[in-house]
Length: 487
Ligand code: GLN
Image 1: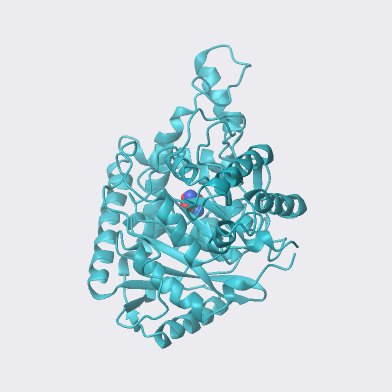
Image 2: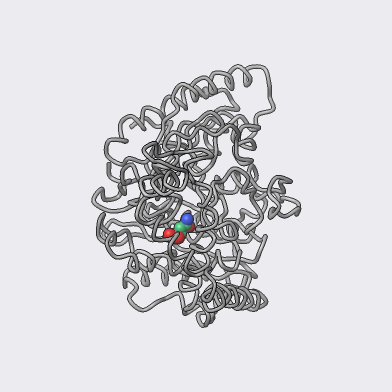
């Protein structure tokens, strides 16, 4: 394999700055890697080779005359196909949007472009981000590079695989209930779900608006901080984005954890979790202690057990409203063989949506209907408040909480496809974080039988810095993140 595509953002940046490499060379190296591997892993829905090379050439011309190069300048990236890219097909891995070319960029894309980032493609995902395995893509499943017979996790499976395989230097994903962290854990890369409101959702195709956030998927923690520096911040075009100042997320990247109090919530070590995952987590937490953190092994968040049930009322309810826009009239797929408008809409949805999306729309419509609203939706909202309050209380005692990202390592393709409940259960450890709106990061923390294990660090609202600090210290003391899949 060529070495260039293995670089991290900070390594590539140093080389670009010194003019040791050009952006065109770096971009070509990643495109070559895409070319070599896509037939095995299927991480990408669209590859934008021409656009990328043109952008890289422009960057190289710019670098020749300017010393103002920012950390993402000239660096190739992959974008989850749920984030709108002007002029580049944005499908959400759905037949409904198979030929949809957005007329505008998401705010995060504008921000990357302001740094002269180079977009090399759009990544595969579960249709409309509904799923945990990237098998619900309407096009093809993505394969886990650590074992091609297994899933990469989801819904941002394509982005996580793209980074684990060095097809790009970094990627963006979105996380509604775990979709950045769970695939990051399954693929041994770093994935951060920011605090709700920290990163603009403008141009992120909506799944469940009160839970969705965009975040980085990277090869190491420093890169994660650099991408956060680029994408975080208030956006007047997203009324839920919060006007807090954006810190320099690299500021707290220090290798020592003295003075930090970390709680280990017992409820996250669920019954039925894989014993190797538990063992790896215990070792990793021991490492945090060696690094100076004060560990409380007996933290408790008793309402955690209701999070999954509440999520599968709230997320489908919001989805059922958000997906009503796909009616075969406004944009996207439109079924042509219908005799009136109602039939157009019916047939458009029948053929345009896959089975998981239909399931969510039905669940949500049911939970919101008269007579059931109080019993389901309203109740779930109350549970949501309790979960949020419980986290608030925990963070009076602890600076962060640590748990597994998932109860198991990556499962086999097809293994959970026919059993939605089993599929939903793979997110038990990540869903509560979205319900509470807090930030959490997943970092590589070991392997079992050659398959990656993720450690999840959860923090106070808008305190991504502490998560990055803990993650960085752990990363410095271990070398899980340096292992590459055997391709
Ligand atoms: N797996 C969860 C779901 O299917 C979360 C997905 C996500 O975070 N987008 O709803």
